[in-house]
Image 1 (cartoon, rainbow, N blue to C red):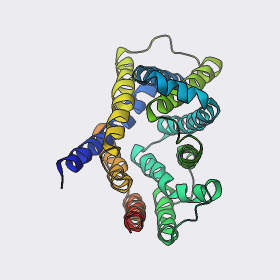
Image 2: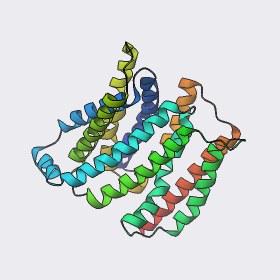
Image 3: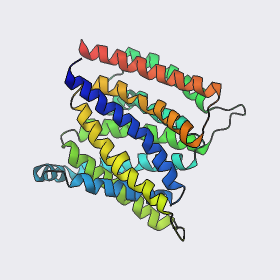
Length: 290
C-alpha cells in the first residue's frame, strides 16, 4: 500500500468516526433546543464557514449555474429535515444509521430513472438481501412501525435522488462552493421553518450550545474537509467501502453514550444490510476496474 493510499484511508476512517460522533451531537443538541432551529443554525454556520475558503472564480461559476445549485440545495434541505426529525424521535440511533445506509442501494434505481443508467446484476442480488435486512431491523412482533423509521427511510430515498441530481446537473460546479451553497440553502430553509413553526424554550443550557458548536465545527465542516481530502486520494469504490463503517460506528457510539441495545433480530437485520452493501460495492468496484 502506498503512503498516499494509507493517508486516504486514515482520512476516510476519521470521517466515519466523526460521522458517528455527529449522530450523538445532533441527538444531544435537539434534546435541548428546537429541532429545525438546530438544523438551521448548524448548516447555515457551516456553509458560511466553508464559503470563506472558496475562490472568487469558483463562486462565479456556482452563481452562473445557480438554478442547479438551488435545486440541489432544496433536495438536501428536504433530506436533512426528515433525517433530523428521525434523530429527534428515534429510540435507536444505530437503527437509523443502518436505514440511512440503504441510500446506496436506492441510488441505482434513481439513476435508472434520472441518468438512464441500467443497474448491474449485482444490484438485483443485493437489493432483496438489503430489504430483508430492513424488515428484520424495523419490524416488531406486532408489525408496528415507528414514525422515525419512515423519517429515516424517506431521508435515504431523498439522499439517493440528491446524489443522482448532483451527478447529472451539478457535477460541473466546484465542490467547495457547491457544498457551501447547499448547506446555506438547507440552513436558511430550516431557519425560516423554525421561525414560523417552533417556539424556543425560556433558556437553553450551555451544554446544548456546546453540542451545536461541535456539530458545526467538527461534525459538518471538519468532516466535509476530511472526506473531500480522502476521496481525492483514492478510488470512489474504496472510499465507499470505508464509509460503510459509519452505521457500525454509530451503533457502537450509541451503545456507549446512550446505552442503546439491539435485539438479536435487529442485529441480524444490520448484518444483512451490511452484507448487501459490501457485496454490491465490491462487485461494482470489480466491474469498474475491468
